[in-house]
Every structure is written in structure tokens, then in C-alpha cells.
Length: 339
Ligand code: AHG
Ligand code: MN
Ligand code: MN
Picture 1 (cartoon, rainbow, N blue to C red):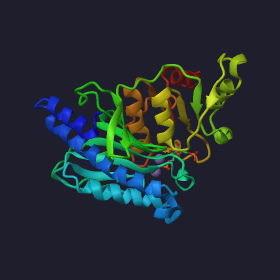
Picture 2: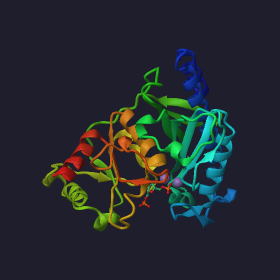
Picture 3: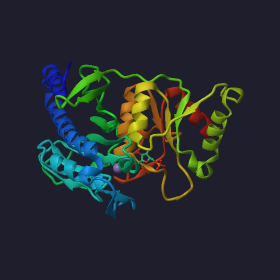
């Protein structure tokens, strides 16, 4: 049994003088997020008894109604991370602008404090997503612009899944991953209160027959996406020559977790409902961190055509279309968009 603490200690032991400081900082920040994840797990376990259900009565900058737990999870992460000496600033789905933490810190943290908010009140899976970036202006107070770095610049990314058990999945960037562990998963042991390593070097199969999409948006999609789903629905006698199965958790963390565990493709495509929005999901604290996990596990992550982690961001809350998972399936979607 390897606890998260053992795991991190081993990393520090193996780190060389050149990367030790950066690895120590990243590990410390992940540890802080994980500690908050345990608190959120406890609240979710108590459910209605902890007064976490229902609306908070306010809207976030995205114009979405905040749930009570969106606000609680955001406040817990904000307090914990701004107290972490390595963290220079944070940006969150639930905060209009970046918040400064410690000017001497070398890291920026972006998070979706509670992903899958529509699942909170019905006792279904939710999660927390995080992305860690380097901070380049140490000594100065952070601004939104400091966060506008590409997904390829991420030092680490991951999520906590609050499902029938609580899990932590994360990956360090290829450079920092000195042990070559790729994507790792830990499970929270309720008896000890410790996260314990359950899997490492997670790899996604290149082909799949399982897809995740909210098909109620079909009429708003662009023609290539409609064609993709039409072909899938035609099953073994259609152009794909095989039968597919749908799964939709309504929390991206849940859908990505399933793909990391048993493969598949997840799509939240661009639609024409609101032309000012490129998609529903947010680049900086949903799409980029999930893209790092998916790519490090051998999958692909695109907006249907271009690689998500190559986007040069212009806004911390910008939205992006998302097509990620099994490499060949993602390539097929791209092929249909390039016809
Ligand atoms: P959030 O709860 O952080 O706003 O994110 C919800 C997102 C994502 O997790 C999920 O895949 C998607 O919205 C669900 O969308 P539908 O409501 O269309 O099912
Ligand atoms: Mn979300
Ligand atoms: Mn959220």
C-alpha cells in the first residue's frame, strides 16, 4: 500500500537538484487541493444533512446559477490555496477575476471547484478539477493575464472524483514526471482517511465503441457532428460497421474518469445556441487539465479539429468545444470536420 504521502516523498527523493524545488512546490499544492477534497467528500457524504443542497441564490460570471456547494467548495479551495506559500494566485470558475495569494509563490492554480453541479442534489457523481501553471512575475501581484498560458505549459493537472468512492487522479508534465508514472490514481481509504495508490501509467485504448454526448443538443450542432452521431446510431449495418453504446454522467470528471478506466470518447461540441460561445466547457479549468490527463494516457484532445492544449487563451473563462478520448475515434471526428 502506497499512501499519497509515501508517493510524494519518493518523488522528492528521486528529484535532481535542478527540478527538486519545482517538484516540491507542485506536490505541495496538489496536497493542499487533496486535503480540501477530503472536506468536500465529507460534506457530500452528509448530503442534505450538511445543508449543501439547493441554490446559493447568486450567479457566477458565466451567468450560471450557483449551487450552495459550488460556493462552499470554491471558498474552501480559495482559503487553502491562498495560504499555500507556493501559490502566487488562483483563478476559479466561481470567481470573476484572478485572486492574488503569495507574491513570492512560483505557481498559479486554476480550478473548477465543483464540476457537475446538477448532480449535487441527486446524490450523483461530482468532482473538482485543477490545473497548475508556472508563475513568471514573482514579486508582483498576479493579474488575469498571468494565467493566459497554453495547456502545454501546465506543470500538473488532475481531478478529485466524488463518486461511490472518492478518488484522486493527476499527472505531472512530462518534464516533471521523473518516475515516468504518467497518469496516476488514488482512492480515499475511509478507514484511514488517506489516499492510497491504485493505478499508474493509465493508458487509453485507441479504438472504442462507447461515446458520451448530450444528444439533446443535436439540432444545434454543426453538420459534421450530426453526421458523426448519425453514423454511430446506424450501428453495425452503418458506415462504422459496429454497434456503439452511450454513457453520460453530466459531470465531465465522471466521463473523463470512465474514459481513463475503460476507454471511450467524450464530446461537448460547438453548437449554434449562443453564437458568442465556442462551446459549453471552459478552456482553462476544464478542457486544458483534462486534455493533459488524456494525452498523457495516450488519448487525444481537440475542439473537433485543433489540439486543445495549443490554444493561446484570451480570457480565463473562455469556452471551447471538446472532443477527447480514444485516439482513432477523435481522429475520425476530425476527419469528418475536414471533409
Ligand atoms: P459545472 O457543473 O462545473 O458548470 O460543469 C458542468 C459541465 C460538465 O461537467 C458536464 O460535462 C456538462 O456541463 C454537463 O452538461 P449538460 O448539462 O448539457 O448535461
Ligand atoms: Mn465543470
Ligand atoms: Mn463547476
